[in-house]
View 1 (cartoon, rainbow, N blue to C red):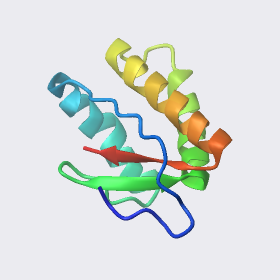
View 2: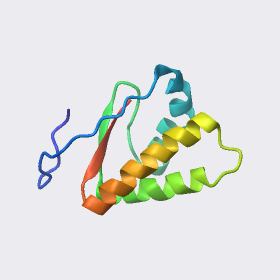
View 3: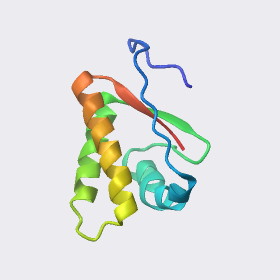
Length: 100
């Protein structure tokens, strides 16, 4: 686990493990988008911490994706979970860590 940014205290950690079968979906529809839209270097084998400001941006991005009628049902499940987590991080003024 990477070092948390200065001022962020250790707290309760909630962990969600996605099945391997979602790997290609995440690569195509999330990892690449993170690199382009959030200037992130997230890639498989990486861990990235997103503070609550970044979570706010990610939540907005996820909301737009979830509004698509033709969104793959598995992506809808993954994005819904991520939206819940990013919204919670914004509310609590904390962040989330994503390990791919």
